[in-house]
Length: 214
Image (cartoon, rainbow, N blue to C red; front, side, top):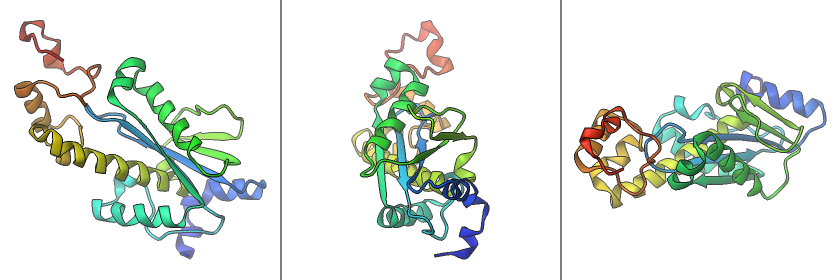
């Protein structure tokens, strides 16, 4: 247990909810809204009051090595955690925002206990309950959301590393599906593969003279 964490800003929202009588507080976050390829992944994490893991923070602020270590520590110390994935085909069908909500709902549904309250990273609160709060930049402001961000990020990265072995031309292990220069150049040269999001069109693909199959 780390007193510096327990007394820090990351426990502000959880502490307020504990004082109101809530005990099973789930933090929810996603990874992969912006990439050109792969699924969007959401995670939900519940801890017992007073449990703190040194180093937990917004996953974007952590090194890959640190995220990997915390990924296993969070799963070991959580009351429960759940992961939801929505594949690229579904994203193309319903749009990325609704796909993100589906992933979040799926993650919460896979918790082994029902949360008393849900803290969600972002502007939107997609759950059918009044006991929820959306927090902009919540992964930097809530310990539970930060933990969920790590689970979601590492889970998705592991999956993109797997896809890199199947589709080695696109560098998924390095770019994780994001629109890096090298990734875009690979799409220009080879076209898109089966895990690319067809609805995420790049500017060069809007030129009908190129006649790209996407």
